[in-house]
Image (cartoon, rainbow, N blue to C red):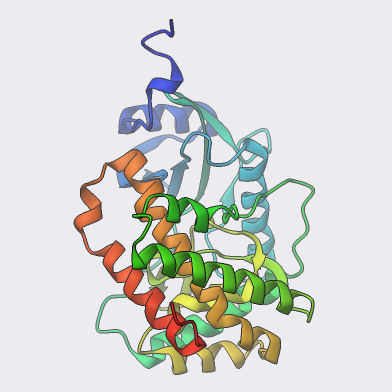
Length: 318
């Protein structure tokens, strides 16, 4: 019989501020003046203040990334910083490593620290100028990331099983299930075809939303590379292109990195896969660690509406 403290008995725990402060003082050898939990979700993020500067410390969810995959992420942050891209720079441990370990009931959790980026999250009302700047910055990210090389592994966030796993939780004869299966299958066929025509596979940010940007007097600063990894790079554009600021965003992006026809053709198909991935998170992933209450928050309804609206102009009569 398993022990009551077996890691399989735990989905997630939340480290206390005191535990995080001790870890920083022990592992990083910084004297902490204050620490606060900023966000607790897939990962737990803390702001850690010292007498000299402030940092963001991330405690990764157990089993999401290996230690070497987190090291890959820190190497990417360092590469971008060295390339002049404004992003939260990694903060190494005294021994030069970029990953520490926090023991938790659910297992070992990787820990990484970065500089706290200046500025604040953008606040509404949004503007064309803001989205133009975001598009330009994302293009600069992609240009710099194309020169990134690492011997560390990093798996793609998308497993390839999202369509089937979303379908499995839907009623067998429902229109939503037919929509997911039909749109997902056709998107995968089209992306395979476009890959043969040169669709660019590269390093993605993975979540270049306004939630992961600070705006300061010196401009935009991206942070949070937790969903970065190899993939169809142009997919990073799909969330912003579904907003009312799509034209401004695209103009900012293409001012730095023009889009060839094959990438423009891929955008709606990548949008379909992106929506299904988000539905997978809300229907499968999130309930596993946060419960089913969030299913009534509207995210799932909005996801199916977006999927239908994206599929319809593509001639998918599902």
